[in-house]
Length: 430
Image 1 (tube, rainbow, N blue to C red):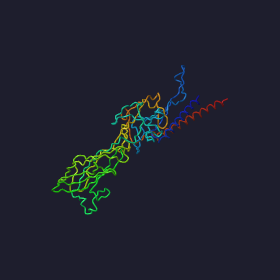
Image 2: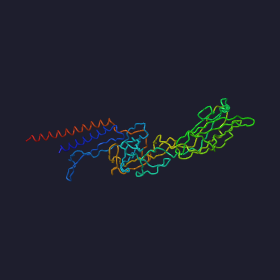
Image 3: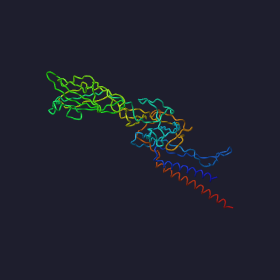
Image 4: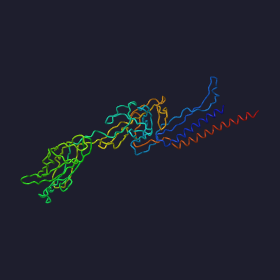
């Protein structure tokens, strides 16, 4: 009988060594949780057994339990590397229609070819749907949605107005009075020839499709104030791309300044006839407003402000995840869009979860159903973006446990050897 009792010790020690070896092998696995073998002694009972003379029948493995203590975190350069600080598992789904649900502590996520946020196995990270300001709409496991990054944001808005504030130099020469111009060589404006204008400034406008177009304003001084005409006069000619804006065939904006350099005309936005830029599907109707801050002073030409009201469709530039799990996407047009909140789950008995490999688990009757919620609420840990949770295996502890398991194995083997010697002695008596 001692043979079989010692054999249970050999089997238990071998199971413990295999478990410890698996822990050591996964010391570098992200999100891995070490396992611990739990033993129980075996007692054979019968109704007539003397309780004072019972001899145990060995040991048995009662459970190999996961130890869900927090592992150390390490920083990374990816905003989609996530770590849970505290309790909680990421929810990932795979299979047709997301039919297979797994829970993991490994937050190493990336972006697939179809812009889904996935783990190394291609399983999709799940989010709670939110409003634009990040308020969660539903927190049930059945209500989660796959995390997917948009390529663009918003609808392009064509430019309708340009606002400019400049200072035109009071001592600027009258271009047409230059001695190089004669009856045989009259002055003709040419935007490619800087000698035909005094100053220029430009900005970017957008058509109805969001295509960027260069809009340039050229300023030409026409006259200075006289007794007969007490105004300083300029002409502003506006080009969008290669097309010059006009009103009824007449190009340019006639600008007037009084003796103090204050703009007296036009005092309202100046509307131009619509044009259809190349590549656009609709006309572009622009107004130019120099406002009351445009002046003519002795200082050099300067632009205090120039802005337009068009908006292109934004292209994805970056993503971020805050401590509450809110995933935001930033776009080139300045828009920031809330994609959703990272769904996290906790369990009444996490040791009851079934391991499926790759630092993942699935629900079992022993674990209970998943309790889903937002990070930082109701006992669920917060999220750390740009961090990964390493394995919680302590290599020193595991090596000491391995030596102890080896000694247990040797002791059980010695028990078998001793029992064999006693049996041999009994056989040799005859």
